[in-house]
Amino acid sequence: MAGVPDSLVFVFLMRVVGKRELSTMEPSDVVLLVVIGDLVQNGVTQSDYSVTGIVLAAGTVGLLATATAFVTYRSTRIRNVVEGEPVILVQNGQTIDRNLKNERLTLDELMEQARLQQIESLDEVKWAVLEKNGSISFIEQK
Image 1 (cartoon, rainbow, N blue to C red):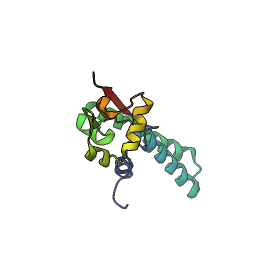
Image 2: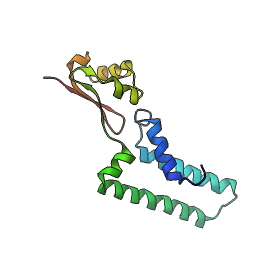
Image 3: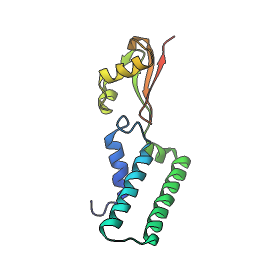
């Protein structure tokens, strides 16, 4: 995409892919792996075998990763854009279908996660929250 910085494309792709698909890795880890892979690929296909080029590329990526971590630590707004926000899936035993649909989760997938936490029925659940890292937290009703 000409004219659009790669980092914005990667943030967009992370948001489109969704939390559940990336749940085994933090989104920043995925971006870092893709960028490093792209840097290595560029070096190989352009026959750039210089250590200086690799050090500059890796240093730039490291600096950008550190700057992003600092900015997201300091700003809640930017953190919510980059990392996302938790999403409520169940409230007082009732599923919130709009949120399930937005996160591309089926009722079967939600029930599977509940069973893994020894919950037989969603009627027992006060809150089910899709966390920023892709896991689902269940808080049982008392």
